[in-house]
Image 1 (cartoon, rainbow, N blue to C red):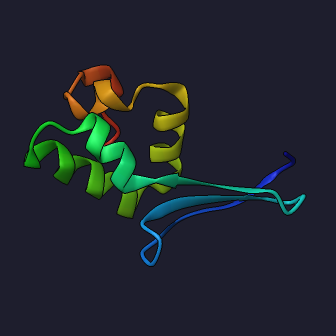
Image 2 (image 1 turned 90 degrees about the vertical axis):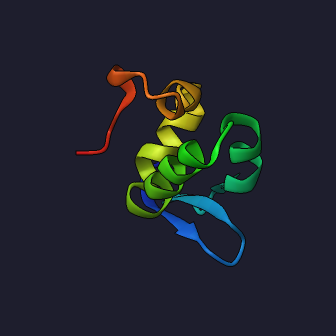
Image 3 (image 1 turned 60 degrees about the vertical axis):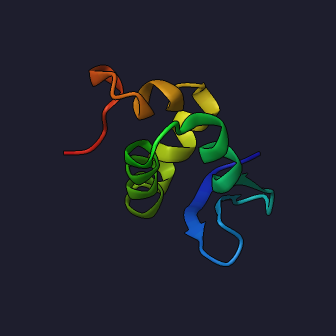
Length: 81
């Protein structure tokens, strides 16, 4: 993987797609992640907000393993202003 060139939510696939300058790419299945992490509609709503408004931060939380703490409302993991 080389330099990050884009990170966006693809509504058609329900995935956050991350593309790099060397033409490599990976996708995060948002439905799959939500099914594992979110216990209620409020957590799903928080994750949806993050997916639509800050997909890069969403991807960073998924890859670092901190998305569950974010969904549970742990203050140090909150990104929403």
